[in-house]
Length: 175
Length: 153
Image (cartoon, rainbow over all chains, first blue to last red; front, side, top):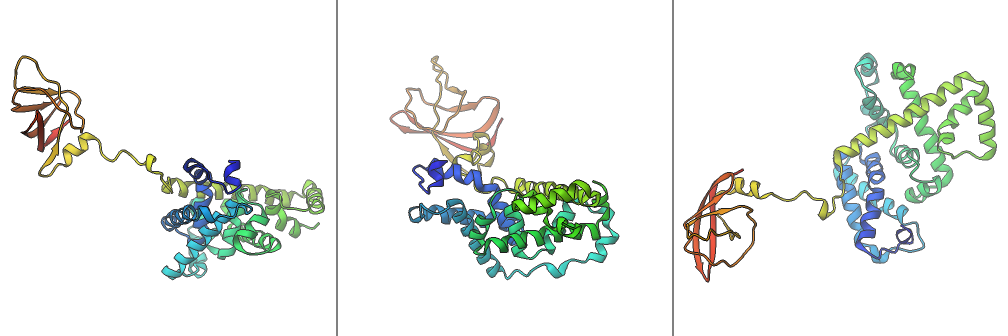
């Protein structure tokens, strides 16, 4: 792995190992941007191919993992532009959900909660919640400062919690 | 540190992102405040559920980036035999019966070319299955076996 960290992919197997180690996080991150598992998969595939093609130009002093995730971010945003996605903020009908709260499972609650975040918050929540990156690295990937990352993370996670407490009190009570 | 501030900082606390000073103050408050302890518990559950949510979504799409050697074998011989529409031309290695019987049994069909010393081949039987075959002698002891349909178990 040390070879990979230094941006030195001596063998094809180094690439494979690197991709395998980062595949899940890459998928989660792409999902946080495009909000759709199929598109997230496509984006990761395209980003991995771009990364592979750029292997000779990778700056060895840079954080290679952060570089890969920058590519993923760019691919996802290009994809959003193409598809003219719209933020799903307004699509949540909280009143409806309140009535059906008992029928909704935890997975759906989490999905709904993620949808109320803005994209920056969602990206930061995914990068930091699963201990994949430090706040500094997340900032490097997203092109924002360390303190902005911190604020997005705090507001994103608190939005999720407050959304759940407000709309799905059963969830909060069940713990 | 008051309750509001503590509850806001809990996610950062779980992510190990607090300064030493914040950490101390937060832990002091948490040790005495039941309400904030509830929030800590809830945040841990949310983290777990977030992880479960993404894990499930990931598994449905996995492998996201399959390497060539991970792809499932394209088709087994059986499937090829099923899928034959009109004519699939194979040359098949075969074991010959030495008694001059022109009915041949192929125990382990493989797609490959071999040269054989044989009498004229008239029929070909696949063990445990039936395939309609047509044999053509190409000369130099090379036979072309055309599979025209049927099923090989």
